[in-house]
Image 1 (cartoon, rainbow, N blue to C red):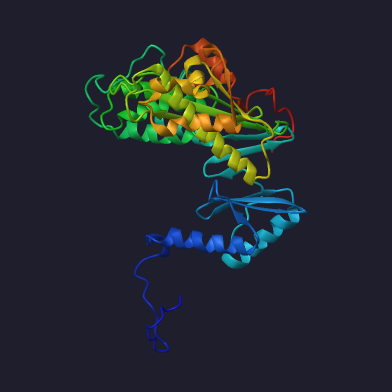
Image 2 (image 1 turned 45 degrees about the horizontal axis):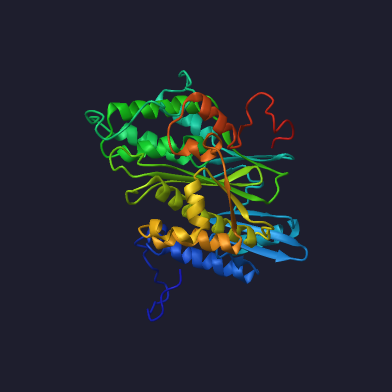
Length: 394
């Protein structure tokens, strides 16, 4: 420890540490500043689209570093550069190299010549064991499609700690489970006053994930770099506030890379307004994804295809004559028209029955749910002879 400037230290004296480094409010900020300084010294560029990502492109290859506090993931096609970076970081910070990426922040990673699978089997099994649902009867869907949950579903639980623990752990599982995102988001709205009906609905999610504990995202090695998006809404879907639920998801090739479910801040007066706001939300996400791909050295050669099942939203985006009908809509929603004219996005109609994000806005019956779930590209590599990965799992 170096004494601060201006403090006279008599030889032989020492400083008494009153607080550990990780207890200081500025510790994370100073660590990030120091790490960024070292990476920039090595020639890496901090991405503007995601400040936790650093890239370096040279004639010999391309490398990228993802940072989460003091955990780093290195990837690239230049093994010499990767080894050099690891050695430099070890000299500066004495890092621990754990080898190939297999486990990171609770996420399990499996690789083969077919692609990369991302799942949370250990977390699922631990949750089922802790809650006593390890040997339960599986459910076909994460939520009863006939249930209408609200805050007035009976008396509150005498002890809501178990309910909150379950929802908290399920929220982390939704990072690799878009099929359970809506159900978990719905139940998380009742953390302040859960009822027995809410607890029963949480138990149904546990019974659903019992079907395939290792189900997760799969990123195919043969996907092209085309970007495709779907967005949908459930108008006035919240029975308490009558606000609408918006959702979108994006694919790179055939691989699902991002999705989001959001409740509106205000109440919409028409379904067209909700659909137009959902379109604006998806447009901003498409713009951000294009920046990320650009930082990774991948440039979109054609517009992003956005699939919409609302003709009125397409008309509002493509025809400025409808100004009288859109005066009450927030100005930032009109970003859709700008990006449409710039050629970033291309709006395409789609049937409601084929709208993938319908699974993220409302509970569905087993038939439609399984149909849309199959389009999310989820994969359980522990199932017998998985159709996509048949050899070389590491």
